[in-house]
Structures are given as C-alpha cells and as structure tokens.
Amino acid sequence: EYMKSQYGTIGLSAEKRVRLLHDTASRRDVTEDQSIENDVVPPFSQSVYASTLRRWAGRLGMDFAISGLRLANRQLDIAAEGLIGSTMSSTGFVTFLDLSSTTCAVSAPLTVKPGALKARVAPEPREINWENVHISKTTLLRREQFVNLILFVGVILWSFPLAAIQAFAKAEYLAQLPGMRWILTFHGGTLTSFVNGYLPVVALLVLIIILPLIFEQIARRYERRKTFSDVQSSMLSRYFFFQLANVYVSVTAGSILKSLADILDHPSNILGLLGDSLPTMVGYFVALLVTKIMAGLPMVFLRFGALSRMLILRLLASSEKRVTQRELDWVYRLENVQYGWEFPTQLLVVVIVFTYAIICPIILPFGLLYFLGALTVYKKQILYVYSPVYESGGAMFPIAIQRTLFGLVCGQMTLLGYTVTRHCYYQPASLIPLPIMTVWAMRYMSRTFAEPSGSLSMERARHYDRSLHVSDNGRNQDPLGRGADRTMQNIETRRRTFDKNSYRQPVLTEVAALPWMYRRGSDDDETVLVRQKLRGVNRRSGVLSRREMSQEIPEETPLHNGNLV
Picture 1 (cartoon, rainbow, N blue to C red):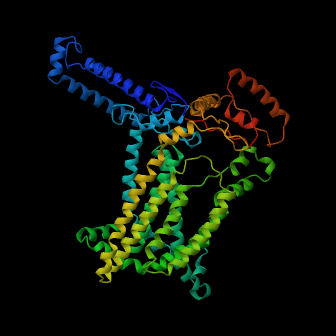
Picture 2 (picture 1 turned 90 degrees about the vertical axis):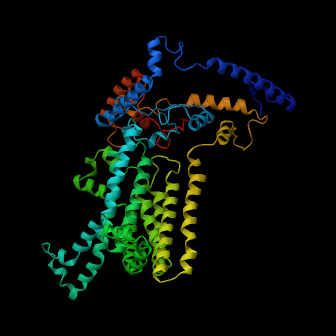
Picture 3 (picture 1 turned 90 degrees about the horizontal axis):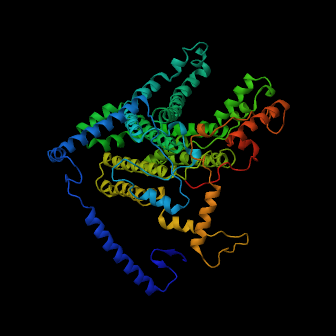
C-alpha cells in the first residue's frame, strides 16, 4: 500500500514506522488524558446550574422527575403518531461514496441512547415500498406483535375450517345444488366415492392457496412493512407455520384445543399422540401429493393469474385495437418470483416426506415424482418467465434453510414418538441427540453465516474500495499498485455517476409526464405534438421524469446504475 496518514508515509522502513507510530500515540494519549481531566465536571456544580435553588432541587431528585415526564411525553407522542399518523418520516437515507465508511456507519453504535437510531445498509430503490417508508419502527413492531397474536389464535382454531371441509365437502351436499343430482347415480355410485375421496383435498388446497394473499395484504396494508423482501419473508414464515398446523390437525383428526388439554394434563403423551396418529394418515398425504403433482404444478406452469388477465381483457375488448398500450403492458408485465408463496409450498412437501420417510416409506416415490416435476416446472419458469423486479441479495435463502431444518426436527420428533408407542427403549434413547444436534446446527448457521451476511466486512469493503479496473485483455491497469490513488479515482467516479433522486420519494421527483404512443414503436401526430410541448415544460423545470427517461433510452438499458447508498 502506498498512502499517507497522520503517522507518516507507509512506504518508510518498518523500524521508522513503528517508532513514529509509538511516539505519536504516546503524545495523543497524554493529550487525551489532560482533556478528560479538564472535561470532568462535578454534578450539580455552579458551572452546570447558576441558580442555588436549581442545584438543591436537582440534589433532591427534581432532575429524575423531569426526565420521567419527558419520557412519558415521548411515549405519548409515539402513541399519537400511531393513531393519527406520523407528522414526519422516521426513515432517512445517507449517501456514502466508499464502502468502508458505509460499513463503519452500519457496524458502530451511532448514539448513546438505546434504540434511538438504527443504521443498516439501504436496500435497492426498487425494493422499497415508498408508501410505508415513513412508518416508525415502534408502530411497525406493535402491529407485528398484534398480528402474530391473532395468527397464533388462528392456528389454535385451525381445526374448525378443516372440520367444516371434512363435513361438507361430500357428494351428498354437492348433489343438493341445482342440476347436480346425477352425481349420486352416475356409473353406479363410482363417481360418489371419487368425489368423497378427492373433494376434501381440493377444498383444502384452495383454502391454503388463499392464505398467502391474506398474509400479503396484512403485511403491506396493516403492518406497513417498508420493503418487498420483508413482506415476502413474513409471508414465508406465517404460511409455513400454518402449513405445519394443517399437517398436525389433519394427523390428529381433531381439535388442537383437545390435544393441547391432553398434553397439558399428561406432558409425556405428546410423543405418543404423534406416534399413534401419523401412520394412519399416510393415505391422505399421498392423495395430497398426487393432487399437487397433477393439479398444482400444471397451474404454476400455466401461470393462471396472467392467463386469466389476458382472457378477461380479450373478453371485454372485442378487438386488440381498442386496448391501450398501458392495458397491454399490465397484462404482459414482468413477474417476480413470489418467494412467500413458492417456498412454503415446497417446504410442506419436505416436511411430509421427512415425517413419513422411515415410518411409511411408500410416500418416498410420490415425493420424488413431485420434486422431479417441480424441478422441471420452476427451472423453466425462472429461466424464461420470471424476471427480477427488485434485488434483495438472497434474503430469503437463510429463512428457507431454517424452515427446512425445522421440518427435519418435526420429522425426528415424530419418529421418536413412533418408537415410544412401539414400546422400544434403546431406540428412543439413541434418537434423542438427533433433534438436539439439528437445533444446534440451526443456531450455529444462523449465528455464523446468516447474521454476518447481512452486512459487509471491513476487510472486504476496503478491498472493493481499492479494487483496480482491469482492461479488456485482463491485465492490471495499475501496475505500481497505488491503491490510495485508485480509491480516490473510484470515489470521484461514483460522485459523477451518482443519481441524487435514487432514494427520494418518487412523488417528489416526478414532473410532467409524457403521454404514451398508441402502440410502442409507432408514432402518431397528436401524441408527438403533446410530447413536444411537455418536454419544454420539463426542460424549464430542469428535471427529467423517470417515465420520460424510460421512453427516450433503449429498452435494454438499465434505469438503475447501481449507485452506492
């Protein structure tokens, strides 16, 4: 490294560098000690409070009472903002031109007040839900806790909708609909048996499909989460636990309240309950996997949502000429992978296979068929259909791994309970370390890999700041290794290419928008005339709108230039 600092030039000899460093540090220590001694002020002294009455009031505890009143006032302000809305945003963006400064600001405590200021690396601008940026952390946390409480009660009472499905999803009730009486007599009653076997499974899958839509609206409209990846992560966790509740209620074939009462009265019965109930329900879960293979994967492949939008638009508009370009773009818009929807669907199959892999191995071929089909379907969708609308840096991967290992723990506990019900003694003792080791592995990977991956290390940040540009032939353009000079050049380059509107509210940076052509790629005289007039307005304002920029640059040019924030 060739750079200068307050200790001298790094290029000096090692002995001289150490001596300069030691002498400079000693002088700074002496100066700091003297400054600390001069800065120490006795409490309630005359230099702090000029009034004698004020000093005596402070000694009697008046300062403590005033601090308590100020704290109560702040809590009242927070509660009022939660009810009537915040008067100012609780989120701000600070721009740095080098990664080292960003890493220091994120890692170091910025204030002595606990919880007053939390700094983290800003997400990509496309990932931010600008409608919810101003919501305070306290309000968001309070609403999240309330929603979790309601959903926990919903998990406990999940047996009621399942019992309703089992009771009414039958051919007898379906035959009561007008014109459906023939189901009972078709082919000698064979269709009745088929409907009674598969209609509850289909009804349950429909109910499960509706849950992610509910969770998404809760996260975006009520909790007011600030990033789309945070919305997807909340959907993933809640949907996964409801899937587990669905498996548990289906297995016990009864109410969770009754099962919880039995477990509280006899805690040792929890393993026996799982061991007695699970082997008898393997046929139900095989039917569930077959339904997901034959119906669930084709629906993913067909993209039922986009297909329905196109069919509805063509049904309402007899000719495509009557449809505007904006309506066509709405039909053929880019679709991102719904991680909060897709991950729990796969994790449900993983949990089922983990649970029955040893107890009833007959389920393994069906699990293999499902994952072979899922590999084909999702590979095609990711390569040719899905397009990334925003980039979250792999935020969903650690959560998916943790939920997979949690499903493994459920399967291990089920196997442990199954061996207990078979009056085995040595086998359960040998299986007890398995869930303990899995939980330890979950915590180890979270502590060692997941949490540190949320921020950049100082070593890697400095390496990127001093990274050298490489020419087309792959040779280093800085053969002398002047890392400091290259760092300054990189900073200047970032300063020139930085877009000051990247992290501003879009409604505050938009100007007069330009009307679209009737069809992209072809001009019409009326739209061209209006565009010319509006461009004059935009140029006089000195700012170009994002929509205007997107219409003037080629489609393959990215709008976001990757500025460091």
